[in-house]
Image 1 (spheres, one colour):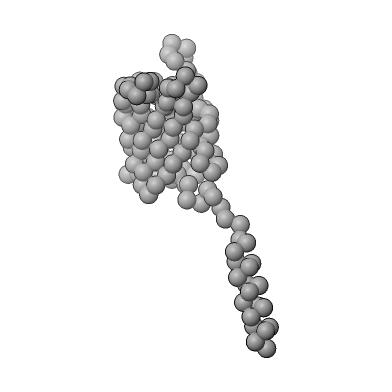
Image 2 (spheres, rainbow, N blue to C red):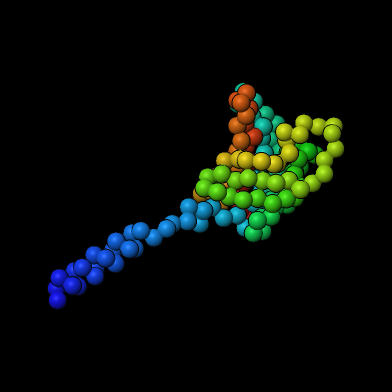
Length: 133
């Protein structure tokens, strides 16, 4: 009887350790976030105040500087430590389209702090530093 009980406990421990974990569980964005955007070239760059509203898989954003960065609205998907934005706005041609929030970025969430960043091949980096409101 003791052997059967030991086997059952061992089996239960093995099954519970094999549970599939959702790496994205902690990486959820819902709510209002505010902070800054900076395009860092050689460690410096202009700073703009930004705000976002994330709901399920959609986002809306605003910037204190027109088209720096170019925000409006769209959808997003988080996969591990990556976030992929789809910007669903129409844009005019008179500015640097690399400032449009679109495509793949790195994301780090720690409590209420969120950092979203992208580094380009020339070493320039776009960094969003946000706090949940």
